[in-house]
Image: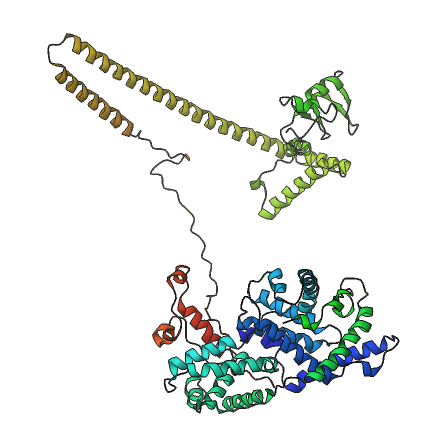
Length: 318
Length: 311
């Protein structure tokens, strides 16, 4: 359950600022490392800034979502949610410049299928990369398998992710049972679902417990439909006496809603940053990856440079 | 035993499974033929370790590993000397210490560690406890004699029973044969019609059967249990000492869920939750699944961590 899970203990942070700080620090660390490595042709302008990384992150997140939605057989929502959470957690402590997101995102999806017991063989998985030849798919699979251990390590081996979908179901059941004032809770389902999908693309999963996210989704959807759920909160959830907790809950919910300022990144920006990123990876990552395979400093599992990385581009995804 | 070969002639063991391996005091094996050949003069040196050996010291190997045989021999000799019994010691601890000493001696002698010292210790012990050893030896032999007597008695009893059974069977066969013969004679000589004779014969055979059954049922009365305790003898048992301890107090497990309380699994049906969950199909219930399980999990997840605020 969430209350004694690793997610509750290690992956819920106090505020959005803390989360942003972490990302900023990861970005700075890699920037300094590349500059200090003293390679010729290095200049500050060639490296990605924090906000540029952000744009790219959101772009790749969207691509991962599209990939998962077009997946055959149909991927359950919890698997998609887990994959997005892995992606987000990974890039909390790592920078995009060090590990290219297109591989990481496939690895996240692959790992998420395994963890959530959505049984897909590896060949079937890469078979969903429709633009590739079977040989290309093989190569992608090899890369995924290489990065898998690194991903698990950066997730600190905390692989169980609690998504808000089941809490939402639970709340709907509870509403139907204990809150007869509301005639048709099913009508709230669609809007709540949309809210949850949008929330998955924000940092809500890193800041709030999934039950709170689900509750916010339902309350939001109810207020959209013009229904009041105050009495539910007071009576059924037993918060009538506990005014303090009640107010805190309202506060969290409003914070969550403000988080949802999700904008799709602009295409030109994305392209510009992507070029930068590819150049960075071609120049700098190959040098750092020439180490031998094995466990090295910082506990990173080093990867060998793969020339085949050039051949596979972003357009090969759906 | 086939995986071992005689270290000297090597092949002969495999070709001749009836050939026995002999072990000596140094722990090395030789097959019978090789023993004959090497120790024709009565004494010689071991093939592998070159210790001087005598032919008489060779014994047929009982165990697969010759070191085990060696240890068994050494142990027999050691125990002849260190033969104190458990009632010779004031406490269990002392008896255990003594046993450990014995094991140390046996171990040292088997693995050729510190042999002189160990032998010296043995001799010293022997000198100090000469009478005790003698007394224990006598006691041991007496006990062994008793055991042997009992074994003999048991054996005799078994043999007698077997004999009786055989005799019984013989008698039964004979009576059956006589019966048949009598029937044939009567058929020849008597004036009565055949059917009546047959009927008579059948009755007689049935009576015989019941008689045999009854004999088998008879249990020989005895007044002795197999362990030697007489029947109707009261055996007094010591009362078990009563141990007083602190009573265990059960405290139910409390888990902090940071959320409203979830109704128990058993109450979900009564509270009406199950009306809003998909009912379990017959295939699912076969495995023990009930819709309450899914419902309970969903509600638990919905309430877990709801009031948790990290600031």
